[in-house]
Image (tube, rainbow, N blue to C red; front, side):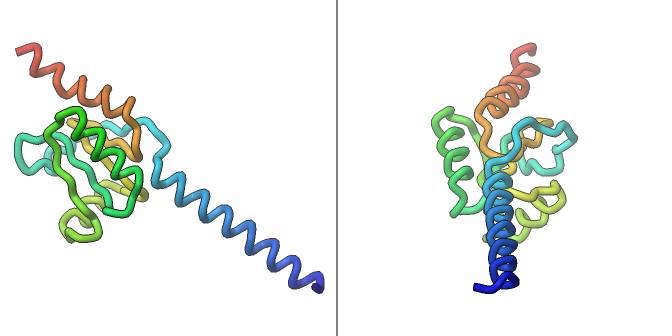
Length: 128
């Protein structure tokens, strides 16, 4: 194998590893949340919305989490629902899932952030 071919294969392997690492990181999310006014994304009184796909393992885990918690939520598939895809883009989504809970946007599957956001969402209601 000559040096040029070996160098090209090495660079290709590095790019492949970087690409796969980026995809996995984007799907899982970096944790944390962004605060914002997301009222226009809620179609009714439900204040939990998941933007995802049917093939995303982290989306499946988020769905199972919300179902187990008995949370009322909307499941929007960005590949099957054009309006959901547009909203996902407006939200700056780059990986799946993107979850809106009240005034928080959470990227990735992060049950700790989900719990905190759900608690914050219920806190004003408990005060009434």
